[in-house]
Length: 72
Image (cartoon, rainbow, N blue to C red):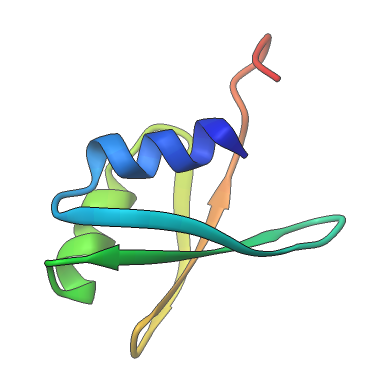
């Protein structure tokens, strides 16, 4: 989870905070507080290595994250 939060915080423009809201076996839900629009966050996340945008609707972005081999 730490890698995901730091990846978002460090590479998505205008992020003020990233909070883990829910965690289950196959997914986690994060809340991202930012000064930018959802579209701008979508654009930045879609360009991050390991992240794949699955759905974008309203103020929600559903993303899949694949860990790189050798990383926890």
